[in-house]
Amino acid sequence: MQDWIDNLFQEPKLLRMGHSQRLDDLNLGLGWLYYGLVRIARPETIVVIGSWRGFCPLVLAKGIKDNLETGKVIFIDPSLVDDFWTNQQKVKEHFNSFGIDNIEHFLLTTQEFVKTEAYSNLKKVDLLFIDGYHSKEQAKFDYEAFEQLVPPQGFILFHDSIGPKLSKKYGKDNTYTYTVYQFMDELKQNKNLQVLDFAFGSGVTLVRKILTE
Image (cartoon, helix red, strand yellow):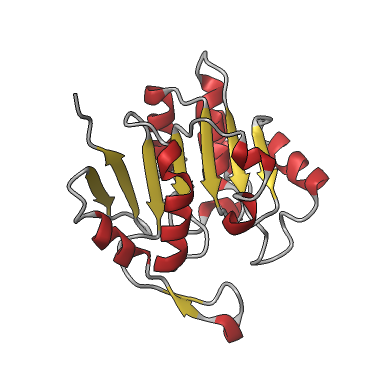
């Protein structure tokens, strides 16, 4: 695993974007949580919404590959920040350079993806990672699009979820403030959910449905 992380961190941009990674001790930061959940829960289907350079899809897909069970990551990103995800051959080569071949990328927004046959064919999503446009409204849309497919034993993770943050990654003329935390405040009022914040890096919030007999 350490050799894989060393290879991962040869790409400097995979050290950024708020997962509390650190090169000095080859530390995945919050990535250990993502990887650990996959090794423990052994999911068959993971959905990841948004990723600047693929840190989360890569770590989650690596967890699946290190399990004995097979599975895949469905990665939804319309590449609105830049054109990194627009060439499907280059996307495949990017993931393959880290020994990962179990990620299926869709160059779509969530609003577009829910209209596809791929969405209609989904029976279960064992782990959902939401890291797209960081507004309260979009986080809610992403959640509601997949929540009914996540079983009680599954997990839902929201990144950049612990407070407001000014973002200029869509350009100085499209600056906006992260408001995902406001949707987390709403979920925390739902007595049927367990909601736990991890205040490291830009923060991640874990949501689970309360198991009932």
